[in-house]
Amino acid sequence: MRNYILLLWTLISFIGQSQSRSSEAQLLLDQVSAKVKGYNSMTLEFKYVLENTEEKIRQETRGDVTLQGDKYILNILGITRIYDGKSLITISPEDEEVTISSNNTTDENTITPSELLSFYEDGYSYEMDIIQKIKGREIQYIKLNPIDSDSEIKYVLLGIDSYTKHVYNLIEIGRNDTKTTLTINSFKTNQPLSNTFFYFDEKKYSDYYINKLD
Picture 1: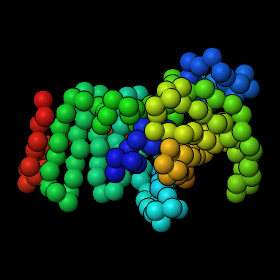
Picture 2: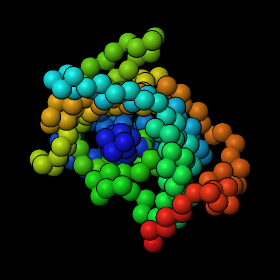
Picture 3: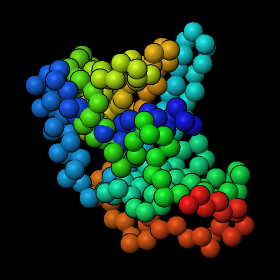
C-alpha cells in the first residue's frame, strides 16, 4: 500500500519552484491549479497500476477519494483513511482496528490527498511532452523531473485533458524502472456533502481496537 500512497500523495502538489521551467508548461499547470482551487469539493474514482517488467510484477487496484479543503476520505485496498482537519483516522475492517493520529502524512516525502491535484507546485522542473488521443480526449503530457538528485523518482508524466484542464493520469517512473500509473476514471465536483461527512463516529466501531497514537 505504501507505493500506492506515495503515488497518490504525489498526484494530490506539482508547479515547482524550479529555474528550469517551460513557460508553456507553466501556463497549463497554472490553469489546472486555478481550476482545481475553484471547486468546493471533489470526488475522484481512480485506477492504480504498478508494473515492473523485469521482475514480472503487475498489480492493479481501484479506489476513490472525496476532498474538501484539507479534509478527505480515501478508500483503497479495503482500508478507509479519514482526515477531518485535525486527526487522521485509518480504519482496517480486516484487522478490526482503528488508528488515530494527528499526523496527516505517512512519510516526510509524501503529500496528502488534499494536495492531490496540485503536487507539482514544489520540487520539480518541467517541460511539455507528447500529446495523445485517449478515448476521444486530447491528453497533453508534461514531464516533471525531480530537483532532488537523490530522489527515487526518475521522472513523472502528468497527463492533462486539454479541454477540461483536469488531470487525467499520472505516470511515475522510478530509478528501479518500476512504472506506477494512476488514472482518474471519474471526476465529480461540488457534490453536496453533509456537515458530518468527514466526522468519525467512534461508537460505530465499538468492536474494533482503537489505537490512539497521540
